[in-house]
Image 1: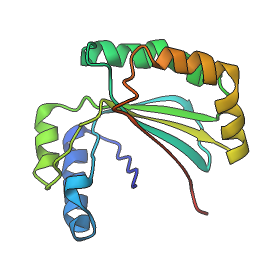
Image 2: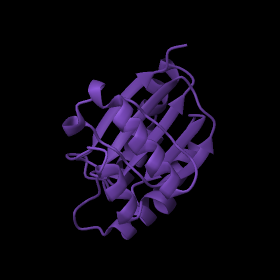
Image 3: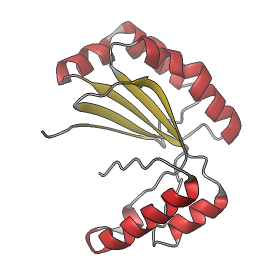
Image 4: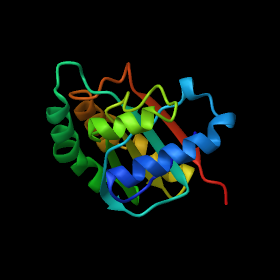
Length: 162
């Protein structure tokens, strides 16, 4: 998994990313790769070496706009309150012409998910303790169930190497 965050205007980012994909194409399975392009919302700005990432799919009954508002405004307070130093959301809301530029690089799955959530922790112990706390295990998860389709979403955790 490569998590690449490019900042700047959508057009410049799409061109840089397409060029990067072209250079990396020999080492990638483009049919099994996913690109998410959209706006980054930094809820808590700090980072940590342990990252829990969720590729998020919304419930089919929700429009993209309703999902984005529910996630960014309704659910983000959970991220602000937990012990983790960092929490970010990337909403897959790039304009269609930007998605087309990314697809022209050979990627078949651009914005196949509605977004990416990343929670950063200082240690594996902090991650386990936070995820086991009632606020996360019960409350945040119950809230997520209202707008995230977990059966079509993907959760992964990894630790940065130093």
